[in-house]
Length: 288
Image (cartoon, rainbow, N blue to C red; front, top):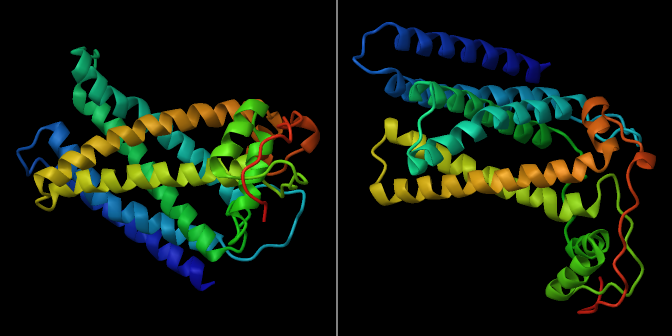
């Protein structure tokens, strides 16, 4: 009950903050063009988006009844599609901001509209990431996290799930032994727990931190070198996210049950293709 009261307060504050911010921007009190005005609107909205996402995530989280047939909870499904919408808005516009200048090509649209769509997408992403942080903090499901002391087991399972040649190479580099019994995955595959989720966490943290550093320059004098590296790493993070999105589509579309699960919450193992098994000839250390 208290969590929902906090969420309602956060909603009220977010709505009030958005109304006040947009009212100031539309009042004409400042002699700014649309692009600069949008910059200030974005940086003012960020705290409200983060607070609202965190409060809603905590309100929706908490212990849930165990259900072996359910892969994703409704809140996770909603967050996934909100994040996808944020990417759909922010990634193309963010890439164009840089590629348009490099190629010296202009769209038949004002530049401020491209920035505006980018900021809307970025706000959705920040809101959703805060949502997930609050939701996972308040909940008890840690299925996507590798338990302490289990990294070798998950890396061994990952090597087994990869195409044989790649699996042998990864096993050799990581020092895992494929000659023993193949580990059994839980709710999520080893590819998801040992590779996909950790790399998603890294690239999302990178683009969030660098994006916040770039936005902070409108309210605080950010040193030039810090702003330079934040901008550079922000572009690198966008490239990594594009790669991750393509890999995510490759993995899920080949296993249609995962797409179904992100809509209904439940996946049928029979719909997924049989995983590839790497020959048990790669060695390099003992399995724990």
